[in-house]
Image (tube, rainbow, N blue to C red; front, side, top):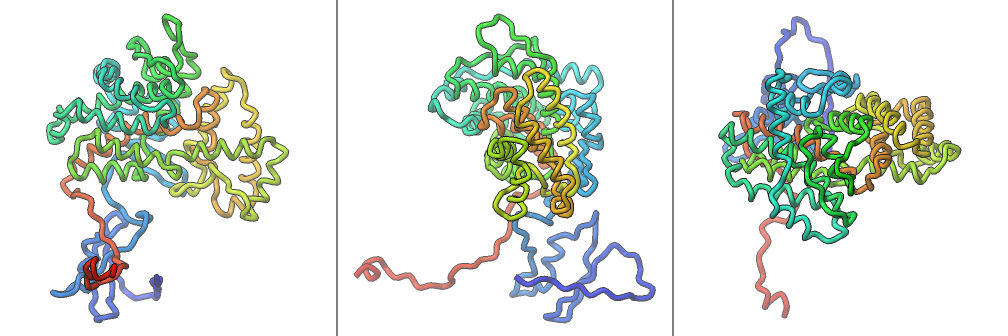
Length: 444
């Protein structure tokens, strides 16, 4: 593929119009394209070179690295400055002073709740945590070694059959009911997939507990009549849930929006998000960090590992981000949460390895010049392991809070008059106009 060459020269008296003038050197025609919010419309590009017989130009952008697919008011990210905001509120303030359900309300409704709205919201979520017994039977039918994400993916998709009215996505009340159900039931389904892998009986929700306390109860409760999690652990989990609640147009959010554009029910759309998150390039990054730290083993081995990274023999996991070219703001918060968790569980020896790795990477010109800063995955795996989660559960812990963000994005999609069913173009590279030869002739 060729690259565009840009010639810059000064012109006197150039007006400050928000437009882009494009000259098609094939024809000599010039086109003036409007610039809005730093973007030009792909449909305007499609007018360039279009004739009665020939189609206009299209944009080739694998992975959508420089293509805006929607307008959104949910999450703001400035990767160069390391800024993350939900509905305009800095992530640092929300993690410090809010709860996950309050943040979920903010994402879904676009504003912070009043006390009455908050109490009603928490009540609704709390009393929809139970799932139909038939769904429990479905989950029990999985093999003993089934991956928890596969179980979560299947069970969330199955919810659409329990609530067929969910297909009526144009009804605000119906939408609200499904949103409540999904946010409420995700911890139950996630905890049951965890218990299933351990061969332990499923634990029903305890409506006397908070959202994260209840999740910990369903995960770890055994024979005790009442499970009372350590408040430091439930707080740390609350922070992790807030940090993972949304992150703009990432792979899984794009999947939810793409599938949702067909006007399918939200359970099916969220299942698509879970499937995308299942992939190691998206939700499995913190597991890769943990494997890396275990391979390094000790603080003394860090310098040799760093040299291996520079020589191309090793891969540094948990550093760098597609969006952030600065320190991921979530990583700073998780680092503090890690300290709180280790007060309860005891310090993981790998923490010392992680801290030394971070220290060297942040000072070494090789990494600084490449803007390789710790991201959200660098410390989260250590927390999950300290809480006794196996690596295959890490992505489930990601999916539970991200459901709130997925649903906020899905709501925007449903109400956006500009959105159409997702149908990207392609550049065809195969054969053309071949003559078919019947099998009897081909095989003779």
